Length: 250
Image 1 (cartoon, helix red, strand yellow):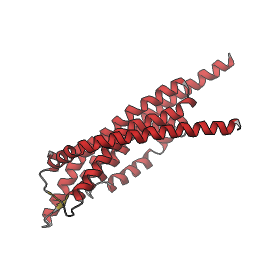
Image 2 (cartoon, rainbow, N blue to C red):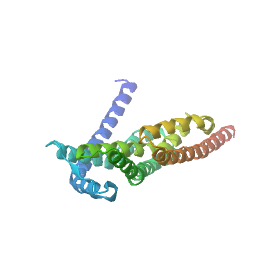
Image 3 (cartoon, rainbow, N blue to C red):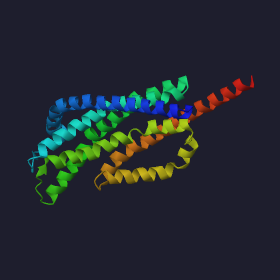
């Protein structure tokens, strides 16, 4: 067997090992999600955000669908640090020591930003959107009979994307370190980026100006924060490259 095939075989075995660990981890976190899904669902139904809305099941399978969906999402969120760590462990042998430390620090930061996005969308955006929808129904003389399946689907569609959007600073930092983007590029496309963010805000919110402003403000802050992070990361990269050049000359 050639060295090349041996190397491929070792990489495949390592990848399979990481994948098995992730599967086992997800089974454990899914069981945890299965245990805590009921109190989470009850809390989401009776919290101040729900505003005393009566939720109804229109199909016999609605409760079990919501329960399993919530357990699955909780399991995915809990296992996500393990997934990121296994990815890091797989690629870390090809990184320098300082790169390993930096990329490892991305894991808790990434999870923190994701949870911050979920919290913002649930405690700030979702109550306003819900109030807007209910007020609109009343003004049109419509009596809403809200199904629990529809309610939680709407809730997840609004909150989960925000968790991903809040990952923007981490993504920008990573791409800057790879040399795929620069702070100059981000500054150059700022007005186009704002336009795209405005479109995103319009897609995930009702068609009223206030809710779009509520969404647009944190998106702009995230973009500007990403730009600051990109500048600092880019400067550090330049300093390291200069140090390497000086070291080679000596």
